[in-house]
Image (cartoon, rainbow, N blue to C red; front, side, top):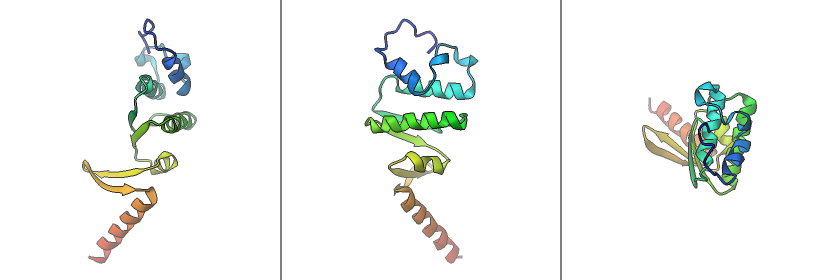
Length: 134
């Protein structure tokens, strides 16, 4: 967090830096960080104020597999701590590993709610219904 050295964070910033493994470069200007480093610092910034709801869009974009696992674990820890973590992703395998509830959105509207398995079944039924009506 470049330029924040005078602000007292009561240990919260240090905890967030450790959680997302950014301690070694947290004081660097953002324009000197790699894409993955920027992503992790951004996540640490998002949680430093201890929000009750965290909204993440494609949270592991730009991260290598090892760092992606670090981020996934941190997000799971936040959820276990009682935070509501809402995220969007195109990688369903990733969502299936960490999501406890699902909403399927299309064109800004919720068109499905339930477990991943139930949403898959509904999608398959719609596809079959379309094919049989042709």
